[in-house]
Image 1 (cartoon, helix red, strand yellow):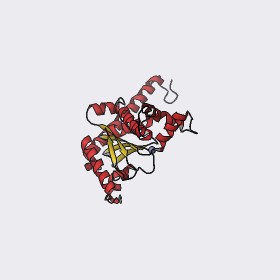
Image 2: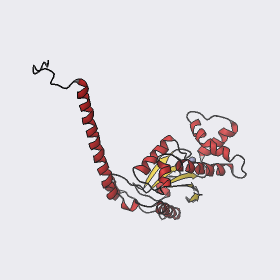
Image 3: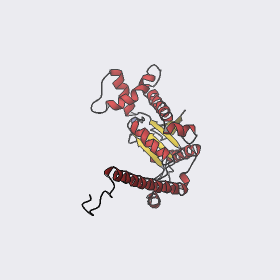
Image 4: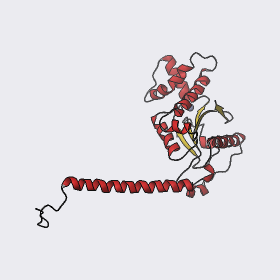
Length: 247
Ligand SMILES: [Zn+2]
């Protein structure tokens, strides 16, 4: 008997009420998803920076042209004033960069890019870990970036530290051994090579991480297979700022 209206069992039993709640919640969820989809589709139709909707090859061309301006000292003026408002509602960068954290690199400068142009992940030693792969997956799957550049650089302190730590079998302090663990495979792979040990390891580390990103299932590998995404490597030259593409 219902205490409220003195009638026998006209209220729904608890499990049914729960089912109704779940049904309502999932309907709201579907509605929100539908709204998000509609927003995404709207954004695809009207990207904040239409000039950033590029093929992988056009993206690379644009990066290298920007780098050429930077090398020659004729970078564009970026006061960002006119870009802020257009980007307040979204972003569609034209390339993703996995760069070392080294303060001398600064991808936005090196490729003479504005706000909303580059989706940059940075970690000392420019290696792909779970978090950087996840970030780049977001860049590719949600933001539609057509190109990822793994950007190593000359005289990389992280790679140099990894070489010394492996050679001397001496762990670094604090959390730094995690950098060594990530870079050590490249260091070991070139240990028998002649020539510049640091230069060889820097290059190998870039090559290894390009391969890792290309084969990262399920999102990046599928995008590469469908020719929606290219993953390439580059080495930044400290003295002149030039980025050489690594094959
Ligand atoms: Zn570095």
